[in-house]
Image 1 (cartoon, rainbow, N blue to C red):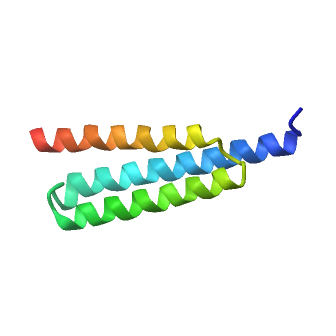
Image 2: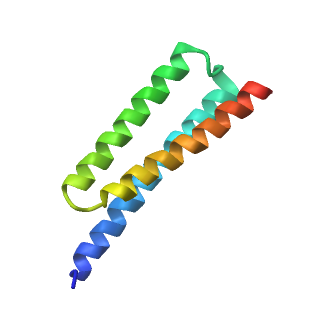
Length: 93
């Protein structure tokens, strides 16, 4: 049986990663709505930097056994899908 403290830390770690993913989504949405178009190098730079940072956070949490590797990958894939939807919506506007 997994100690309750470990479960609590795992839940907290995943919640923090999920919150960071949501911040990235909001940042990119604001950028697309107000600042630049997806073809802009600044947009690509921000997106690449943010996604890289989140992937490193997830990797760190996985290495500490706070998040399962498949859950971390799923979180990144879900964020990428949501960002693709935003990108496609901006392209068709």
